[in-house]
Length: 351
Image 1 (tube, rainbow, N blue to C red):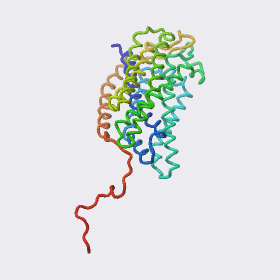
Image 2 (image 1 turned 120 degrees about the horizontal axis):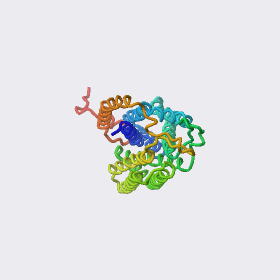
Image 3 (image 1 turned 60 degrees about the vertical axis):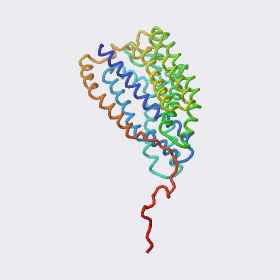
């Protein structure tokens, strides 16, 4: 396989891994204002992702770094053209990260509600902006003959990209609910199941609309054939539909597997429809940036390949181990003092 193609595929895998893992993180954050009924349950929901969310963020750093190293022209055009949108994304990332740490700094109900709302806002905003940004790559943005962005923030918003943003929000929320179905128990678990059932139909409808629309956009605006773009789209639709059926059946593990596959399929459909270009230019299609023009030199890609083959398995092993260690369920049930401090088996002696 040509190294340019290899790195394009690897970047798709990295972005898929990021959205697969951070997708349920974002989903949990979106559900924070709606599912828990008391502070103990809110703490349990934070606890369900607390040990892993920062590890999941590594995938974003690696994906962005790999894009910069392997396809510098792609990175430069995307990050300069989407500058304001990515600045807003950075704001949402910051308040979400801070909310995990600062929420525990005070027991004040108002303080904790504020940071809970910040986490929910950040999680929703991140999903929305990522959906809009990635959809613009295939829908097309105004590029000049040098491959530089020649538009403004308003050019990033249109019915298709907004549909993509909403689809990412709903599918991630559904993904987060199925994840919580694996990590919770008791009354919280029952409410999580109800939330998953409520989210199932909207996520399937909007997600399916987005996937079908992406196939049409790839054919119409990127000069692609229906095949192979339709393959991940059909798989994604099937996965989301099965996830909904399994959520109603109470099969939490399989439902989570299907929302995970649906999330990956959404990313795969976008990038399959995008290749061999990395950014489509509209209205002047001739200015589109393709893989070969955006890629680094062959020697650079060869060195990066060696590094990736060494580092990637280490990251996968570490993350697998961390998920195994923190696999226990959380209930959110408050522990009474008499239950928190076990009585001495020897009893007390009268003096």
